[in-house]
Length: 211
Image (cartoon, rainbow, N blue to C red; front, side, top):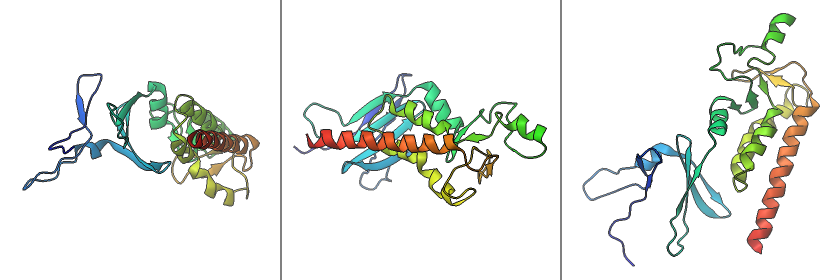
């Protein structure tokens, strides 16, 4: 079958539409509407996967030539998860609270009173990344690569502060300097637990794929 024109368009709940595909015609500039919303491209089990994000709606585009089946599937992300990803997630943990909070204190230093005032008012907590990863994987078990990306920022921390460990908290501004206790068991435990969970899910997926 030969197609003269093929356009992939998604109609959103608010009535607007989003064109995912690019368009190239003779003597005309290339139109790449979908790339403005492209968040990630990766190979998943050897097959290409495009992830588009439009607000709280996520589109996953896969090359699956199945009879009478579209290659795009739509997922509605939880507004709470989307807000957490946008305002709280960092490479070394989760903020507490959001930088949008008027009481947020991004700098953890000074006297004991100053530091205690900032303890739960803006510092980053590595242990909270475990709960965020759980919440993300709960409805989306196949998004293992994204879950691994949540944890990718912790590797270099093992060579700073207390060698081989991870601090209790970090400053909320780059370069995210470790603060307070330099070796905290719950920080290490939650990150290890998340890695084990991802590895276990990945193993199950591989077994199901072979089966």
